[in-house]
Length: 311
Image (cartoon, rainbow, N blue to C red):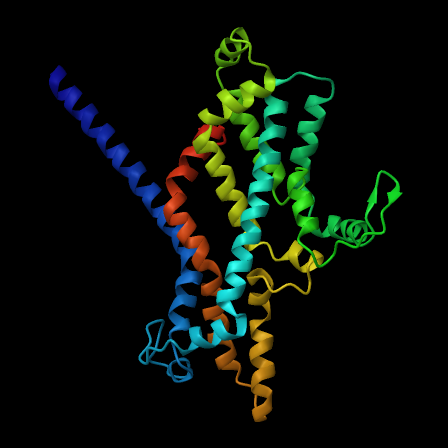
């Protein structure tokens, strides 16, 4: 009798587990569809011709496969040159932001000083402030650089300096979230290691560089990848501080207008062709991010788990 009850209990638990797993898979599948379908649709449309879009029997999968959309989009974007410019610039921004975020987060997590909690709260509040609100005062600040009331007369607009200054001072894009993640990680870092380093005669800076950083490789890579992705996809600050730049973040928004200007000479505007080329330009823009994700997804998952955001 007892064995039958145990078997029924086990089978009931299995059914509950299967039901929970099924519901989870369904929800995740729906979420994946919502996220991935627009990208997949653009991918399929980018290989189509105008005849495919005008053909009612064509749905997503083309009958006339072509790479002409990518060729034209690449020409309009000057893809090769601008890809190198964007990659180098975004890499530098991400390194500067990583340095600032790591130092700030370590100070907030390991040192006690008056106002520490307030500074941390302020860094979190920056996440809910839209960048549009800050863009105007920042624009005038960099147009005529003023340091502690001293007017330098420098105009830093249309240069990478404004974004670099924001990154290195901990005010860069999404820096508040990155500081939070690093602070959570450093807060859980064993204090015994700091004490052991202090016994060996290491000061705070030596402990930070010789003990903490070498043990934080995965988290540092995670923060760097987050910064890299956000800097790459940011077209707002680049448009505000460097409106004449030719970074891919700016150029990809201008492809539709470029195609329109190029086709106006024929007397007609090819709206369908504009749409197809625009889809190809969008995919050319996100290809580097997809490559970064494929190679860095393991570090991203581990870093998020160690930051304490989930669980």
